[in-house]
Each structure stands twice: as structure tokens, then as C-alpha cells.
Length: 445
Image: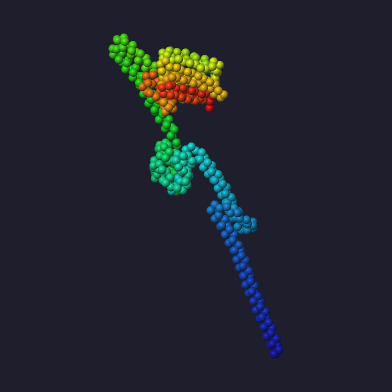
């Protein structure tokens, strides 16, 4: 009985032990599986976090306009498509940036070649960009990005226009003068809205200095013409009126007054012809080039001046070979020679001399006319070619000068691709020399 009891207890104890071992193993297995799954999840989490960090870093780099390398993930990776999308965005942004930089460089290059001054300001009143023409007009370097315009623009009128544009958001336009360079400019200051919250201001300066100079010359020319026309017209009107009031009955007075009227009418005719000559030159007419015997040409012109030469007892000496032939526009050369010979007679001494000389050289030929007249002071020799300029007003008026003759000569010589020079000494005489190229074309460039 004892033996049976012991055996039963043993079996019962063994069964309990086996049952307990099974529970322990199950518990240990569960713990191991839980630990394993935790480790797997932890490793997966860390891998995912690493990939997410890589994706986040890549996006930040793209936003900051950096150029990180492409993300390379396995196709089976859950973030593969997202990585591809981010890589695509980076490539697209790179292409857009390249196109933008190319266009920007093109715009900047174009601005540098513009003849108008351009300056762009941001809404903080700082210079964003400026071209070379703006620096030239302002007389100082203006392409100083990031600087306040008020510290760089030294012309009050331009600063005022820019300030008004910033205050009113309206375009401004005015003709102003740049103090530093003494340039006249047509200034446009333009308000450029970029979006609802941002805008730019653009200053555009057109150089009109030359245009203003031309306008002044035109006004001076009109004023001088009016003055020169008024003198003979007043004389003709006055003497004619006197004749009509009874002076006509006195034969001597009538003849004297009619001679004065005739002389004044000649001056008027000469002035009108000179003005018309200048108008024809300014219209840039075609050249009619032909072969010309220079000796015979000058002889024919001298014949027309025979009465004037004999009246002042001036001896004309022609020193030109009768074999000289040149290619020239005969009509325009005749204007030049007529005027120079006429001056050589008009401003010569009674009983003086006149020499006309010519020579053909390798590439050009020249014609010189020398007189024994009053002469021209050195400081006035350049100015005699200006329109309406006279060395001695009283003497010029006495001799019937219009003040346009030599300016007409200069313009005709220029039209013939030539040049004119003068050498003179007061009380001795003057020598005018015109030089032309041997080869002449009908339409010189």
C-alpha cells in the first residue's frame, strides 16, 4: 500500500512537473517571440525613420536650392514611389532653375546693350540692378545691388520722381538734367506690380542731349535767318516808301534809292540761295559723279567773275595743268569753287591777287585758292565755318556777306567725302584748300 502510494505520488509529481515545464516553455517562447517581434519592429522602425529622415533631408535640400544626389531605394521598399517623386521634383526644379538663369543672363546682357539707362528698385527702395548706360548718364557706378537709391542717385529731380512713384504707385515722366554729366534726359519712372504684396520700380532714362542741341541750333538758325532777312527787307521797304512819298520826283534821289534797293535785293537773293543750298545738302541728295577736266572747269568759272575781278583790279593766276581730270560731282564742286573765289574777290584788297592751284596725288587731289585779302585771326579760323558767323560784322555787311557761304562750302565738301582747311594771316591773306579722294562713288556711305 505504501508502495502503491509512493508510485502514485511520483506519477502525480512527474505529471505536475511536466505540466509546469510546458507552461515555462510556453512562457519563454512567448517572451522570446514578443522580444523578437519587438526587435524586428524596432529595426523596421529605425529603418523607416532613417528613410523618412533621408526623404525629409532631400526635400529640405530641394527647398533650399541645393543639389543633393538622387535617393536610390529598392522597388519593394514602401517609400520607393515617394522617393521617385522627390527625385522628379528635384530634376524639374533644376531644369527650371537653369532656364531661369539662362533667361536672366539674357535679359541682363540685353540691358547692358541698351542705349537707355535702366535701374530697377525693389519695394524696400534698394537697387536690384542697373545697366552700364545708367552709370554713364549718372556719371558714377550705379550697379550697386542692395544699396538704397537715395544714397546713389545724386540728382534731385530724378530722386523726386522715384519717391513720388513709391508714394503714389503711379508712373512719373519728366525731362530733367543730370547734374554730374550735364546730360538732358527724358526720365520715365514706372511702377511694376509683381503680385498682391510685392512690386518693383523701374527708372528709364533716354539721353536727349543731342536732340536738345539740334533744337537749339534750329531755333538759333531761325532767329538768325529772321534777323538777316529783316535787314534787307527793312531797307527795301523804307526806301520804296520814301520814293512813293515824293522822292521819286527827284531824279538823283530816285536813282540813288533804286540802286540801294537793287543792292539790298541782291543780298536778299544771295541769302535765300544760301539757305536753299543748306536745305538741299541736309536732305542728302544723290551724287552724280563724272569725269571732269579741272583746268577747263576753273576757266569757265573765272569767266563768270570777270566783271568783279576787273572792278577791283584783281589779277587771277591759274596754276592747273590742262591734263588734270578728276571724278567728282560737277554741280557740288561748282558751289564750292564759286563761293571760295567769290570770297577771294570780295574780301581782297583793291589791286590784289588771286592764285588757284591744284595737284593730283596718289590717293587724293586738292584745290587751293589763295588771296591777298584782309586775312583771318588764328582764334577765328575754326569759327568761320559756323552758320551766320562773321569776322567783322560791319565789313561783312558792307561787302554783302550773309554769314552762310563758308558753312555751305563745308557741307558740300563733306558731302563729297572731302575736307577743307584754311591758313591765314591778318593783313597778308588767306589760303583755302579742299581735298577730295581720287575714287568717288555715286552713293558714299
